[in-house]
Amino acid sequence: MTISEKIKIVIVTGLSGAGKTQAMKALEDLDFFCIDNLPPSLLPQLIAIHQSTEETRPVAVAMDVRGKGHFAQLTSVITWLEESLVSYKVVFLECENDILVRRFSETRRRHPLADQGSIYDSIAHERKLLADVRQLAHLIIDTSAIKPAELKALLNSALLGSDGTDVLMQIDLLSFGFKYGVPNDADIIFDVRFLPNPFYIDELKQLTGEDPEVADYVLDWPQTQAFIDKFYDLIVELLPAYSKEGKARLTIGIGCTGGQHRSVAISRELGRRLTLDGFHNQVRHRDLPEK
Image (cartoon, rainbow, N blue to C red; front, side, top):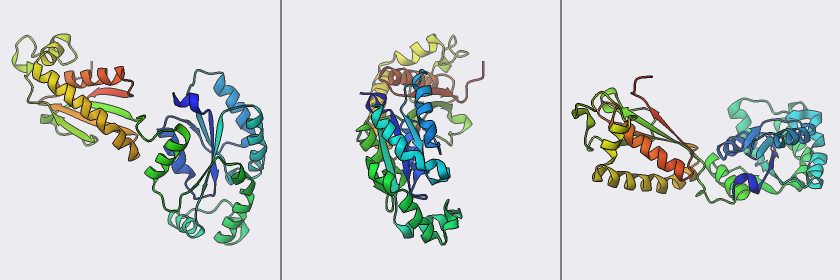
């Protein structure tokens, strides 16, 4: 079941400083269409626009007391969602007072209700304002002692019913030549210089791994097929582990001598297999000349 079939709208709310920004980043990584600080009164209009487009991703909106007077409309909007039979969830984030105070001190940001007295007074006042919304929440998360990756895992499990094995991360396959240096942004580096080199075949030397003749030469060797099969299985096996750690993008560098032949052909073949199996990916060739 796709995430769009499971849920349509997620409202993220809660105490200021409790982690709504981190939650929205996590939901964006989980392929939600995210909007921050939306006035509650605009949610019905947003839903209507969203449903009239070809956008299939579920929507996540952050709403909190930054909206001042607009925020008071949130409970009535939640009631409207219930009556409209829209599939939705309300996520409420909270945190211990001392931790909230420390977070505001570290970021040097003012509490949205700073005119209510001390920071503790502002937090207490906000808790009262949010009491009714908290009662309507489907999911209440205390972020006092959890890391961003753990928050993402909680949201993934609660909203998508996933334990992290439904990998939604973007996979970047980057071919390169070792003679020009190792790419700094690669999470994994693999050296394919052990494979037969088309550079030493006169009719292939001036071509690249994007040309069928070179790709066929590289891929037709039994050792190449054995390598690709095992390397592909390794990638697929590692993806859930990287996803559970909160990683949204995995860059795999595949290098040969000059980044023209073997690494290009291997990257393209791995990208083809990932696409066939439904993984989001893109293939880039760092050292190929621009056409």
